[in-house]
Length: 425
Ligand code: 3BY
Ligand code: FES
Ligand code: FE
Image (cartoon, rainbow, N blue to C red):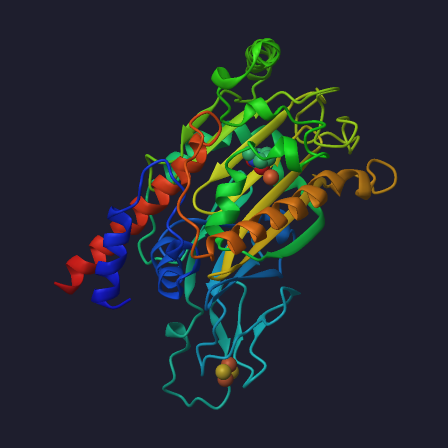
């Protein structure tokens, strides 16, 4: 970004009206998209997948973030590592499929061969003086939090990932994600800016009118909903729900599963939220009959009615952990108006399809919900492109967490610009 562009972006941030959606420029300008890629996706911990993406030594998964392509690899000692997907000879992309299973990483161009630890093992015709030891693959920072994989492309990643790991592990551990298996993956391209995808996820104001499947098991009141604007009948329901939340939290926490809300969505660099909430009807899982979709419960869990644990991280993820399955979502910007939503469904690694679970039953709520959300993102992108669009007010009763997303985003963008401007001075 040029200095003039940085200054113009700083001014745009300064002009933002708190509690309102962002100015149209944020959703469509190419230079702001590039700033997002550099200052947000290039300098923060980005959620990219789960340990079960690479269950065995030699398993590789490729994650592309803008022009940066990253290999996530399980090595022979069962460690998970990340490397830039760039050959150290003349730069060829090493793995060009989304997944691979390899013995070593061999570049197809001139056959330079790297071990699963990134070391260059073989390079023909390079002469006696050639030092292989300084031509290993460039590492990328990677951190697993109870099986959720985060990478950071910056040289110096934010250190407060440790605080997030410490806070989230007690929520996640009982589900034993590393011993799950992926049974369904989808890559959905949404036709909207990535921030519209994230804003949409941070509220359930739209759920009643748009998600007939999701609202079977989900209580909409759970997601940042304040009961102040409800009518009398609704208020009674909300009060009953609150009592259920209190009882459930006490029961689940008694069984060793952290459940009460922890929320640092706007006051941390590595920002997050987690809360386990009761589900409606049978209260077991996010399925159309709200009963477990898989009979093999996860980890040490023996109560199917564990509700739904929602974990959110800034800038790009949300996750639902239930007693029987996990659904996890990673958002990667593709262009100012296109966004990849990568969704994975996981069950216990020993669960057998057709015996313990039915794949259609397991996936139908979120397959439908993702498509509905993609449509909402698309119509919003279409609307914000119009000259008539102006930022509109968020509901303080239902969209408080959308405001926290914008707060975090603008704060981190400002911090990145300030560093860059200081370095240029
Ligand atoms: O995905 C979530 O975390 C929730 C459920 C639906 C919308 N969102 C608030
Ligand atoms: Fe990879 Fe030549 S570019 S071996
Ligand atoms: Fe939605």
